[in-house]
Image 1 (cartoon, helix red, strand yellow):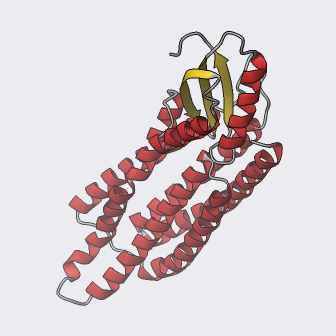
Image 2: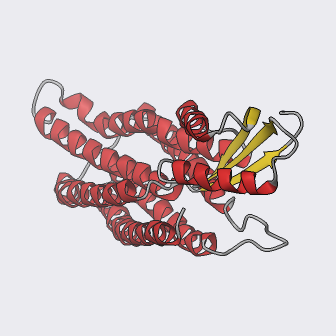
Image 3: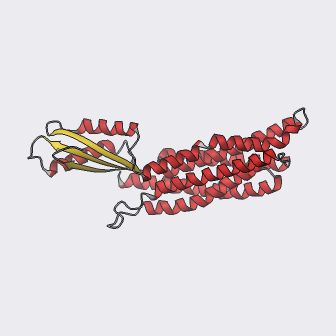
Length: 304
């Protein structure tokens, strides 16, 4: 990846994280305040998600500055492992919060539900749905410019926030529709039912973040589509007249792809200049298509 593209990706990260921090801090204060006013567990869930998000974004800000640090003898690859570690940690925190909220609302549901202050919920719904949707769309736009793991997890986080806010709106509409009808006895339970439903629906998001972070930290190989593109790029650039056979080893960590290409030359006279030239041609082919690539071309007598 060129210096200009790295700088652009870093700028997109910084801009998106600032947007996320302002949005999460604002709606954490609003959500928790309205939760105390209305007594709504759904509003409390929204405020808690935003509070956790704001605290995690502060960590992400520090990580983005460290990712630009060059490698050293003690840290050959710099701080790239912090990105998947952040994704894993945030996934675990969101999963724990979701499970706690589900358990507490199930207990409230079984004990008779809660009565809501509809006036407070109306005001909060108007603010939360509009605000969370706006921030989600802004983060989504930044993520399309530079699809880094940090931006992906932030986009997923705001998708959850928007979903929760929308669920609060649904619970309010249901309360209004049912409070004077035959189903009025069900009104105290609607808030808990909506919260539990949202938690169940949103569970795949933190689970996906945990899986992604674990795969990177355990140095798993890239997905099948990335592997296919790697193999096609190498096959297109590989000079068959000089190479008897070749194999690759690859793994991803955060926004980086480590790729080693092992070549068995057709003659012992092939020198290091050949491998350097091939490496440059492969980077020209791979870099525009994949995440930042760290490439090694190794001449060997036997492939792995």
